[in-house]
Image 1 (spheres, helix red, strand yellow):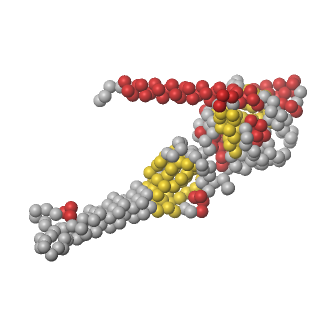
Image 2 (cartoon, one colour):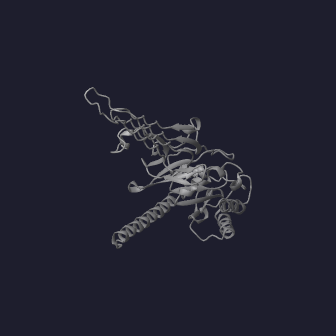
Length: 356
C-alpha cells in the first residue's frame, strides 16, 4: 500500500429540501386549508478516526464527497425525508484544516472520534406554517438552505511515543529492528527508509511503547532538500526524540558536524520540535576502541552544548539497546503519571470552583 500522509478533498453537505405548497382537497371538507409539509434536512459530512488505517491513500484517487439532499415536502402534511449523512474514515492522528482559510478544524487523536466537517442544509417550511386567522390560504413556503461546501486539507501525523532522528545510514532502521518486530529495509547505502516505520517495543509486565523511524535528514531538509523534510511533522506528536549519531561513518565524515546538521535542521523547521526532550544515542559502539569512543562522544556533547542523557549502543549487535528502552519506558511512565495528576487537579478545581 502506498504511503500518503497529505491530501486535499472537497466535501459537500446536502441541501435542505423545499417546503411544499398544498391545500387539502376532500369531498366532505369544502374548507380544507393548507397542508403542505416541510422539506427534509440535508445530510452532513463527518470524519471518523479509524485505528485500522495508517495512510490517506483512499483519498488520493477520489477527491470529492457529497452527502444526500433532503427530499421536498409533500401535501397531506407529509415531511420530506432527511438526506443521509456520509462518514469518511481517516487514520488516528489526522489533522483537519480548512484549505481556504488555513483554520484547524479538528485533530483526530482517539479511535472512533467523530468530527462534523460540513453541516447539512436546513429544511424549508411548507405553507401549513403560514396559516393564520387573516391568511387562511397562504401561498408562502420557504426553500431549504444550501449545505456547506468546503475544501479540506487532511494531514496525517504518525502517533508514536518515540521518534528517531539522524542522518541517512545513522542506524535508525537497524535500531528499530533490534528492539521491535518492525522490519524496515536496511542496506549500506543512503535513503533506504522512504516512509515512516512504526515498531512496538514490548517490555516486562505487559508494558510497551511505540517508536517511529522517519527517513534520514540531510542538510537543508527544513527547506525541502532530501526526503526527511516531508516527514518532520510526524515528530510533533512524539513524547521524546532519540538523536542517533553514527560514531564511525562509512564515508569518514565527522560525527560532530553530522550531529550539528540535525540540530540545525530542527531549529530551522521550528514547530517546537527543539523544545521536546531529545536524548543522544551514540551508535556503532562495536567499531571503535574505548578511548577513541569516549573522545568522540565528548566532542559531540561539547559541540552541541549538551548535558542530558547519553547512551552508547551497537544497534546491529543489540548492545545497550535494552537498557536504553528501559530508560525510555520509565520516562514515558513518568510523563503519563504527570499528565494524569494534572488532569485530576484540573477536574477537582473545576468541581470546587464557585458557580457564577
